[in-house]
Amino acid sequence: MAAGPWGWGAAALMLLLALLLGGARRLRRRYATGGARASPRGRAAAARADGVRALLVTAHPDDEAMFFAPTVLGLGRAGGRAAVLCCSAGNYYNQGEIRKKELEESCFLLGIPASDVTIIDHRDLLDNPAVEWDAQLLSAFVLKHIEANNINLVVTFDAGGVSGHANHISLYTALRNLHSERRLPEGCHVLVLESVNLFRKYISILDVPFSCLLPRDVLFVLTEEETERARRAMQCHRSQLLWFRRIYMLFSRYMMVNSLRLL
Image (cartoon, rainbow, N blue to C red; front, top):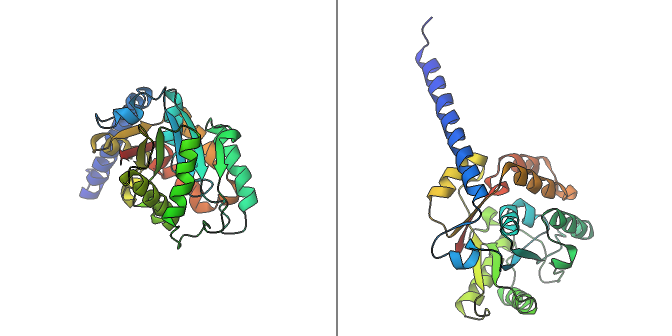
């Protein structure tokens, strides 16, 4: 019996998806094993990571695994060293003390010892998706940490904050101000994590071709083994593992791909 138009359409769609998936897997292997891919503008920041002393500036415990695991693991693979400055204890649901411990467990799996994890628990930097933090206060905390630890690369969110969270965006504002006012130490670069549209955010490995082809300054792609490590780090945040975050872990491109731009 001849296939109807719907049958041929479904077959063509399945073939297209198979081709896309195969291409994405090949690109993933190529980029993941090749280390950080950087544009000429981005090479000074992360193309060779063996001398990089990076500071990941996050808003909440779990940001480091949920959004930045490819950057942390990619830098580590290339010989860089990363530390975390988390600007709140994530106490929105009065779980701050639990979340501090979860953060240390997650960072340990990502190769960051507890001695390189700092949590700011300040009354004016409360975990709240509707509150913009004071950029001047944040800038002071971040700059002090950069200078005290001889940091030469800072990584944080971009103006979209990936999820539009006001606390995430406040970090971008603080780093943008430090950069534009030339208050950062000489040779200290700032990379911001690219916020992508909802479609790209949740197509998992199929976003690899987009990330490889579209403009960016630095790109980190994880191997399958590294992606599983990133998921295990996210699983350390047991207090936050609601059903939608489990779906996020399976389908979000941020669990395996980070594309970043220099300020």
